Length: 400
Image (cartoon, rainbow, N blue to C red):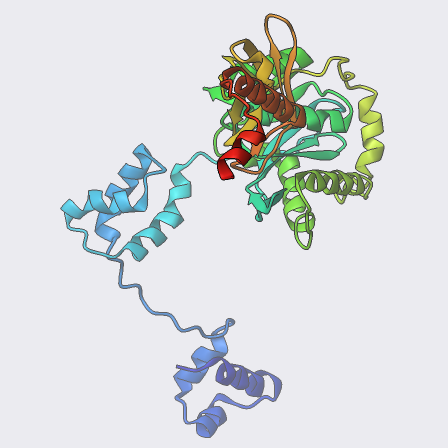
């Protein structure tokens, strides 16, 4: 067989320099027929070998039947189903074939570029920083950030929380909306537990928050991150630009740095919009509903009776309560930054503490410690027996 370089040389000598086929045969030692064939071929020679078939050829009709019934059938299961028919091949050859033919049985999905109207939507997601957040007392803790991004302006905000429980998620939503400064028509979420109930319906707590704010909600389909690509891109930028190379003193410092970073990012020119999100936000806020005067309540609440040991436990921490209210029923309220308790009968404040995100601490207010000491000293005085006081002269007489 004549190689590509040899083929080109023969054609050059014959067509350019006018060398005859007889002379080319004498120079190269090739037969005249071989030279004629090379001169007649307009395309360079290529090596090709007849296909010897594949082990899968006898099983392809059955594979087609299986994929027609279930296009997402895993490759391992396909192999198990064709084994009784005599299949003994390896996993790699089957996976390669399935990767090639599976799209033929799936419904093709098309996408279109979405354009959002001002104030139409605000997309939300939850981002988990790679490193634990310092929370004081030599402790660190896994944190989560509720991330929000408006569809029209691309203005974003974030709120640090320490659990994915519903009250903390709702507190994060509320803080993000207040940070952005207005209310969109619709809050867009994936099917995040605590916010999503079931079958595309919201949880009761999230529905209550939306009712208070007078906004709509929308849940994306499962495994469809493209549906909220606006917040995904903002979150991805936070992961690569905000967290790396930063140190945080505590959770308050983390939130302060996050707010400052979001303000800076919103003032940069957006690559896709060719505009600054903060400028488009001003335009968007004109069409968005204003924030309500009353901040929606997202606190945890429960009622208990103060025990003789006047402490309430939450998130592994014990918070002191007024010892003078022992035995009375109080309503405990856990906010995102504060813990309070109020007596139901009298309305008297039983405690007010800053919420601690460190673990396994006992937090006692100074006034509660003093009240405990006063009550303890009073109890001792009541049970102290009377003791006769003798004159020292009696002991002097005994010694003498």
